[in-house]
Image 1 (cartoon, rainbow, N blue to C red):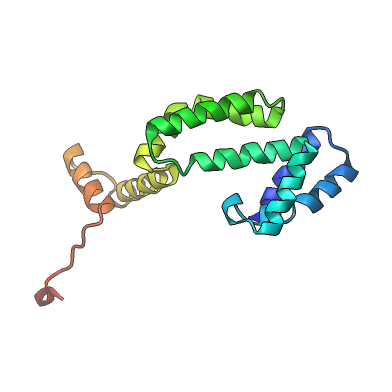
Image 2: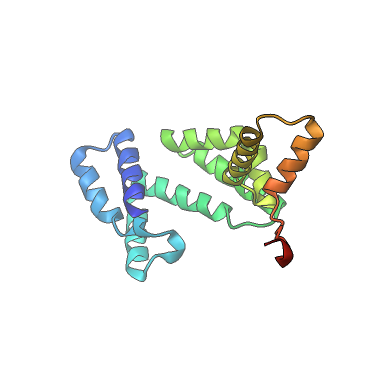
Length: 170
């Protein structure tokens, strides 16, 4: 939420060498802007963000880079997404903001997976959930006679098949 966003920004401000008094001032500026995503900002919040941009603060620059990365996740065409991410990566790595550069380098290490997400829209949370179902299935059975039986049970457990019994068996 907004508090986490402000905390992240304040942490970034401290890492960038901003003094404590300036951090409190930045908190006042950014308080409203972090309440929601940029697409849901009010006119007043957008005005505050614009005034921050004109001040050329490192934290305002970092916030613009963050907003730009948020835009990436709305792109549906993989080629357009990769071109956008390349531009963003160049901007982030040349921002002279070490925390932003670290994020950019992390994205570079996971580049292929991030681009694949654009086509599949399957994130790691879904995969972790499926893996959890598989591990629970293996624990319940305490072993299967052969791998084929295990795979069959995994398909039955992880699929969304409705296996309602006929009324005669209820």
